[in-house]
Amino acid sequence: MTSSQTRIQALDGEQLAQWLPSQSEATRNWVTTQGFDATAGTICLIPDQEGSIDCVLAGLGDEPDLYTLAALPSQLPDGDYWLEGLNETGKAAQLSLGIELGRYRFDRYQSAGKPLAQIDSDALDDSIRSQRDAVFQVRDLVNTPTEDMGPEALSAALTSLASEHGATCTEWIGEELLENNCPAIHAVGRAAHGDRQPRLTRMDYGHPDHPRVVIVGKGVCFDTGGLNIKGGVGMRSMKKDMGGAAHAIGLAGLIMRAKLPIHLTVLLPIVENAISSNAYRPGDVLSSRAGLSIEIGNTDAEGRVILADALTLGSELEPELMIDFATLTGAARIGLGPDLPPVFGRVDQTVNDLVSASERVTDRLWPMPLYAPYREFLNSSIADLCNNASTSMGGCMTAALFLDRFVAEGIDWCHIDTFAWTHKSEPGRSEGGDALGCRAVFAYLSERYQR
Image (cartoon, rainbow, N blue to C red; front, side, top):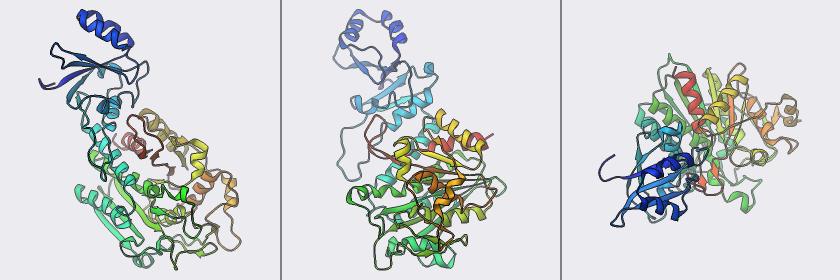
C-alpha cells in the first residue's frame, strides 16, 4: 500500500464486531448511523476530519463468492485504493478476480462514462490479470457488432494472439476450403462475399512432444437463419453466434500465457449464415470432410454443420483431448437457463473433472448425457444424417449427438453448449457478451497438465 492509496477493509459480520471496538467513538457512531452491517456487496465510506475518505468498509456477508465485491469499482469514487482482509477469507483470488471483472466496460461506441476506481491488493497477481484479460477479450469479441466483427476480423483476433505468443496460423478462405476438403464450412458460408467469405483458421502452439489438445470454436459471425430466416426478435442478438470462437480465443490466450506444457491446436470454422442467390437450401445434401452426407432439414441449424468439418480435422490430429465451444442450441437455455452451459463428453471422468473444476472457479458447467438412443432422431431417408432432429425434444442432446458422428472413435472429446451472454446486468457481469465455461476449462487443463 502506498501513501496515496485509500485503504479498504473487507469484513464479514463477525469481523466487523471485532473491528469496531478498536475504533474511535466517532467512527463507531458513523458506522452505526450508516447502518453498515457487512452485508455482502455493501460499503461504508468513513470520513476523516477534513471530510475526505479516511477508509472504506466493504461487506463480505456470510458466504463470499466471486462476485461479492465486484461492484466496488463502480460503487467507489474515482481514486486509488488498497484492499485488505481478503487473505482471511480463504477466497482471496476469487474475490480479487471478481473486482477485476467488475471493471469491465464495452465503450467502443460510447463516450467515456464515470471513471472506475482502481483497486489493488496482495491477492492481485499475474494469474488473476490473465483470467481477467481472457474474459474481457471474450466479452469484447462477442459484444462487437458484426459490421466490425465479420469473418476476417474474427480470424484476425486469433492470428494476432498467435503472433504475440510465437504460435503459427493457417487460413483456408473461400474456395480454398473446397481445395482442402472442408465442403460443409464452405456451403454454409458461401452466400457471403469479400472479407465475409467463409474460412477455417488454425493456430498451432507448443512443443510437438507435449500432449496434443485441440480446441474448436463455432464462429458464426451473424446468423440470419439462412433461407429458414429467423424472426426479428431471434435475429437481434445473433452477433453473438461466434461466441464459441471467442471462447476458444480467450482460452488459447490463457494457455499460452501460462505456458501449459501442451501441444495446442485451435480450429475456428468461421462463416456468416447469409441470404443470397447461392445460399444453401433446406433439402440440400452436403458433403463433409468425414465423408458423411448431411441432409439440410433447416438452414438455421448451421453451427453443427461447420463444426462437423472442424471436428473431423481435429480428429485427424489424433489429440489426447478435444473440446469444442459453441452457441449451439436454444434448447440448452430452455433446459438449464442462461448461466449453466451443458457439457457433453465421451469419457465420464473427464466430464466429472471439468464440472468439479468449474465449481471451484465459479464458472459452472452442467453434465448432460450423450444418450445414444436419440441418434435415431437424426436419421435421413436420403443422406447419412440430417442436420436437425425429427423432434424438438432433447434439442441440445441431439445437437451433441450430431457432432459426435464427426469425432473419430477413441478420442476424449467434450462439447460445451455455451450461451456466451449475460441477459441482465449484475456486479461483475454486465449485460451482453460473457465468458461461460472458458475459465472452467482452463482450470481443468491446468490441473491435468501442469503437474
